Length: 105
Ligand SMILES: [Zn+2]
Image (cartoon, rainbow, N blue to C red; front, side, top):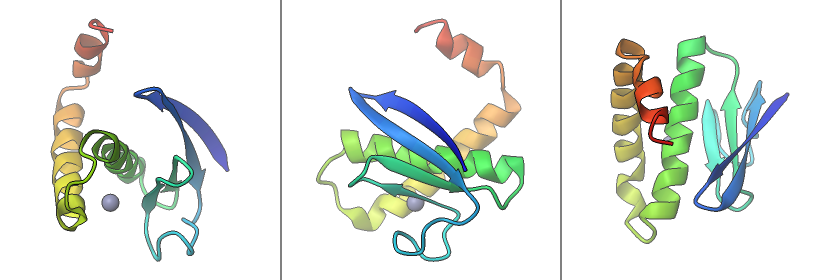
């Protein structure tokens, strides 16, 4: 299992790349965000593009969890999946966008 960490809005998050997402957290999922432990799980049983898409999807859950606290969860999956699909397309078509964005950091 590969681990990584990231920091967002003053909180550390752990990213765990695992073969299977723990069934107790999400059943048959390719990824999940565990807000109780500030942890993301990403299944590695997919293509690199799918793994990246899953990671982005879970990062959007973190962003939504931190920024849009209290908004109805019913729309959460649709919003997050729509945004992650759009961003994956944007990033894959324009990889130079990371350089442009990082110039502002
Ligand atoms: Zn999700």
